[in-house]
Amino acid sequence: MRFGIYCEIQTPPGKSHYEAIWEVMRQIEHADDAGFDVYSVIDHHFFQKFSISANPLAMFAAAAQRTKRIRFRTALHTLPLENPMRLAGMIAETDILTNGRLECGLGRGHAWLFGSSAMPLEESRPRYNEAVEILELAFTKDKFSYNGQYYKVQDVSVVPQPLQKPHPKFYTGGTSDITYQTAGEKGWGIFVPPLLPWKVLEPPLNIYKKACADHGHQPDIVYIRPVYMDEDEKNIRREVEQAVHNFLAFNASPVYSLQDERKKAELVAKGYGFYASGALESLTKLTYEQIVEQEIGFIGTPEKVIRQVEGLQKKGGIGELAIVSNFGGLDYWKSIKTQHLFAKYIIPAFRGTTKDAAAD
Image (cartoon, rainbow, N blue to C red; front, side, top):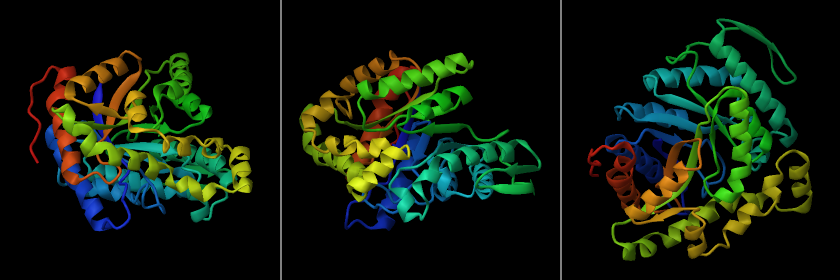
């Protein structure tokens, strides 16, 4: 099992964007020293509490110059809002600048992004499908043409070409069954949403695992959980409770831009029914005890978290546990503490190594 870190760059009101971005950069450096395998960052615009991660490729290119071995993954590029011919070149250049340490998540995007991006919601699925086809052509052909509904190009050569051949590894993620089916058919890795309990995730993951088996692929599930640890149980709730509630509230905050009944009907009709279901809003009503009990967060002593990771392994198909160490306005030192303790206790328990975690 790989161990990664996933970050949305949640930014509470009043916090400097400069400070938030540079805290993440320092956390990436610490994660590299501590022995984490990959750092994933969301691609997201417009909603500060949820994310200010407007250009993950730029962050990765900068972070690569300050790190030695950790890999980088966008989670996920919102393909319907990108020009795929241009995005292919940007991915390739970032792969070069990271010396082949880049991985790419490809997604349809959150429903709330489309209005602010001046893109009709009904175009999200067909634009996504065409963009995937174009990226695959761009990375495997010296020159290609494409005649789709939205993209029509003739004799295009994408330069530069990526260092990794034929391209960085692809991942996807989302809430619709078709996403899990397609990922399994293509042999892509898949992200699961970081705030849904296992009982909700198990049915779509079974779709993914079956599709992988049917098409001769090994499943590669990236399981994302916010994590907070301390060696003394008495410190944990006092240090993390508010940030855990903020994490769920900040994730749900953009959905309130989609609340009128006309918009909800449109979401259901155009394949974004999850955003009209009330699922995100319901998470904000959970108590701290429910969040911990349902393992929406892995929160506890190192011994407890080891048991939780052991239980996760038994579910099968989990290629990576990606922890969220920076969430809900958590103090910088607390994020570093969790990374340090996770690297000190959890990673060695599953790798049989004794490498000490780096100090901040």
